[in-house]
Length: 222
Ligand SMILES: C[S@@+](CC[C@H](N)C(=O)[O-])C[C@H]1O[C@@H](n2cnc3c(N)ncnc32)[C@H](O)[C@@H]1O
Image 1: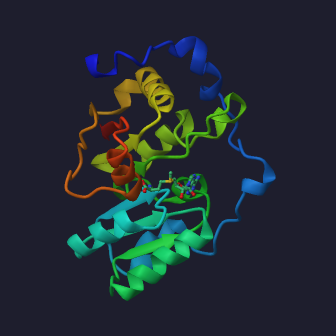
Image 2 (image 1 turned 45 degrees about the vertical axis):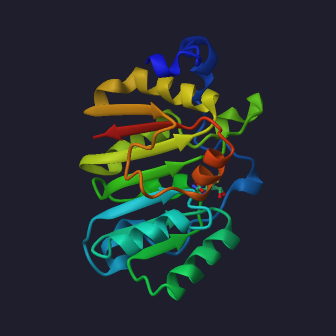
């Protein structure tokens, strides 16, 4: 915990309201309708039952495209709410001839809720939007409810891999976990040193490394 000494923990007082945030923390303009794709039938979507990795907030898709090219025997699903970025990712996947990666644009909260139980091997969550303003903190993707859902959708031994440059957000996540630690069989955290497949990095990760910004990493194993 020494690495995080500068992140003062005051969970009870500071983050109590986030634990009870409503299911619909966004104003209407952030709501997206569920796509026609039925997430319950992931196997139909990919045409096989291979191991599935999911990236939440896949941006331009660079990270998932690199993994999909490295691991053709696995499936990858990128969820990116900005339609323009999602389409760009799809175009790149086609140009690269990758058939094991898909990108979709609904709100990731809706998607992960509708995934089958125990269907995902790794959830990648890199640089989730920090929502700095206090009144917007309840919009952060990682909260009590999403941690519960991620756990439910992982296979036994499956992983959540998370990175953020926002110390306050990271501290909130650690607080949430301390409340529900027993759910996870293992937890690792580090600063400025990627835990999962260090050779592949996201675009934001590369940018922040170049800027010498601190990056906080967390890995949870079911
Ligand atoms: C800071 S960017 C990081 C992109 C990429 N993960 C990286 O590390 O390069 C965060 C991305 O998450 C997307 N995002 C945020 N909340 C989301 C949600 N609830 N569902 C889907 N995408 C979301 C944003 O649109 C944005 O493209």
